Amino acid sequence: MAQTATRVPKVTYAAIPTEEMDILHSAYEESLGRVRKGFGDSHPMYIGGQPVRTEDEFDVRAPADRTVLLGRFPLGAAEHARHAIEVAHAAFRHWSHMPYGERLTLLRAAADNFRAQKVDIAALLSIEAGKNRLEALGEVEEAADLISTYCDELEQNSGYVRDAVPLMPGERNVSVLRPFGVWAVVAPFNFPVALSTGMLAGALVAGNTVVFKPASATPYTGLLVYRMFAQAGLPDGVINFITGGGGAIGGELTTNPLVEGMVFTGSREVGSDVYRKFAEPYARPCITEMGGKNPAIVTAHADLEKAAEGVMRSAFGYSGQKCSACSRVYVQREVHDAFVHLLVERTQAVVVGEPTEQGTFMGPVINESAVETYLQAVQDADRDGKILFGGKRLTESKYANGTFVEPAIVGALPTDHRLFREELFVPFLTVAPVDSLNEALRLANNSEYGLTAGVYSEDLSEVDRFFDEIEAGVTYANRRGGATTGAWPGSQSFCGWKGSGSTGKGGLGPYYVQQFLREQSQTIITEQLTPDAERLEVEAAGE
Image 1 (cartoon, rainbow, N blue to C red):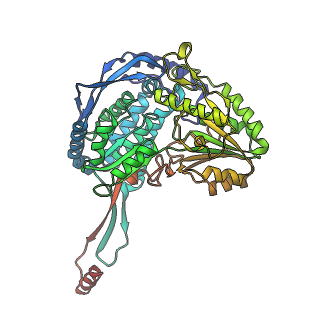
Image 2 (image 1 turned 180 degrees about the horizontal axis):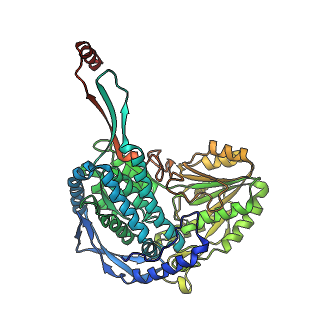
Image 3 (image 1 turned 180 degrees about the vertical axis):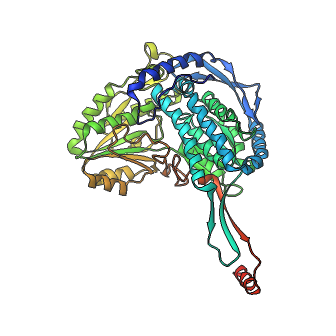
């Protein structure tokens, strides 16, 4: 992949440099032409730096147009996962014993690769995952910043080596965080660059080696992520890339005793199963982020224009296929109708279309299974509530070969309805009136999930109460750019509570890398002890 020659402005989920948009769009259009030239090729896995192919392959197609073959990838099996684990295990000693400054130099070079090639990566991401161009560019920027943030965190903590209090003269006590060994990294389709890179970076910065399996819907983007690290000069075997179905490969990754840790992002059902299985034959670290059913609260003191904009962007950005997407809204009754009017007005203006086109806000959902989930939800909503906007699959003209649906807004449902409880991962939003902030908080917290949440109120006492009482790891107040979405490395940690996460420590933040390390206490006798000191040492050892 050629590096981007033109300086392209930085895009985040919250900041888009409008004065430089022409540069950005021109570079993106050039990249589209480059990446399309490689469509239809067969691509290998990489184990120990060597390409590995299989007789059986699977096709990867664009969700916006299923007639477009993006590429073919190996249908890896348990033996490929086993080989990758063994290679990663063999590479661990050299990588973990490398001075951490040298490791960070290589990983920062990987971050530079992402930045240099971000427009090409974003163009492919738009096509393979169906993400609009600005969100795709933001995701690649996030990947680079994730690596940089985690490198800085390790460096600022001196490699997580810390002196402890000596018990007696001549003694030095040190607490050291040390890497585990081989980590399995299992990535989702919805952020195949940023989430994959963040999980990989956390493990690699800490000195672990990895076996990386991307989602089967987005292996091409996963391959580019692998290449950014490989091209930075990481030793062979430190990162290994395997593709295929989750059954055989996942079984090997969760049961092989050489795998010392696992990091997974995906559904609560699969994540919980992985977490249970990975506890055998003994408890091993398993970091899971398992989605959400994320609420927004709009009080009578809200700026309704701001609230409608933020909820719409959060609910329908990337077709609702974000772990952080807003999927339910509780609106104080006296402003309910006015808010819904503004929300529907903004949603009517949403452009659904080919994700690579400049004006598109919402592309396709990822596959036919997602369409079926959407249509079933619409059917249930039509039966039990009222569809306020949307609810149809789009099949005419430019939509004919893709998996496109309208953004949907639903009201008049009972607040205990399944559509208020179950994560759907499609552009589907439920709205309910409430009598008070107290009722809104109760309903918002009445969920097995606790990932993100947002509030709109110009009353600071209400905002303070929201932060004090909401049961979610990522919280926002009065955010026009997204009611519950838009976390960025070093700015907002992305942490799931309750059924949304397993560790209580989030990605993007200051505690993430520590989860890929285990503590060792080291006691060193630095001086010859007197007889009295020797006696005291023996007595202390007896305790």
